[in-house]
Image (tube, rainbow, N blue to C red; front, side, top):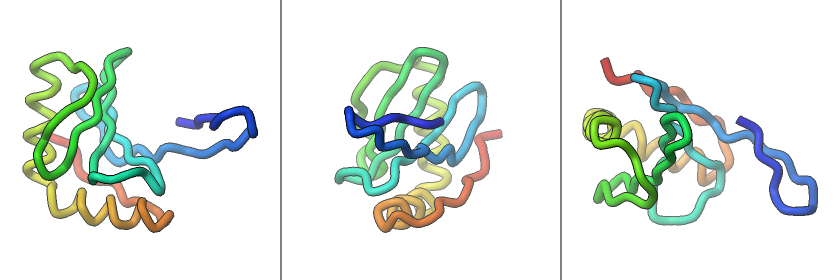
Length: 98
């Protein structure tokens, strides 16, 4: 995914770190605290904090349950991805929920 930032024409990519059941998981480079990820399913988008699983946005119940389960399974990897993203480094892919 490529986004254009503001009117300055800054273009950057939003790394996709996983995809499962139609859900796309991304992390932004140099994003704000607290550690979180962005999930998208069709037109629905949600931000989920890694530590508390608190959310901003709306997601279908089944998709939120699957995404939360995936976070629980990969929490250590996701915090590592977060640190790399905050430092502007390449973010590895995380295995999908099966």
